[in-house]
Image 1: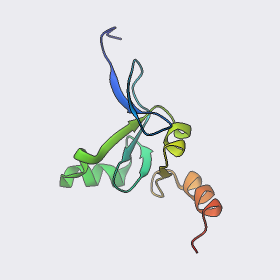
Image 2: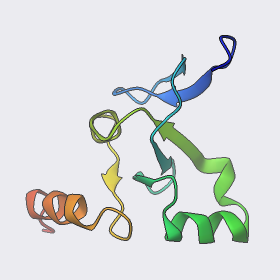
Image 3: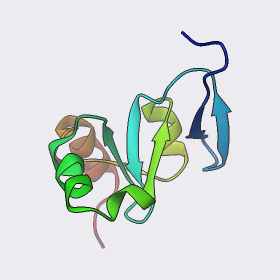
Length: 90
């Protein structure tokens, strides 16, 4: 790996930081949803344009959840179901 390569990620507080490791998950700042980098729903949104300006990256799921993001129902269905169970609608 290139020693000078850095990635901009969000930490558990939602603050940007430079990482020597790439993010393993992507998210959408506006909807506060995170998912896999190969998520079909995210890739479709990126292909339509506009989504990229709101794109953020996380090192792991724990950081994404701590920053206030929820799992994607499409690419992380088990994590989404667990999140939904713990966050019932009023």
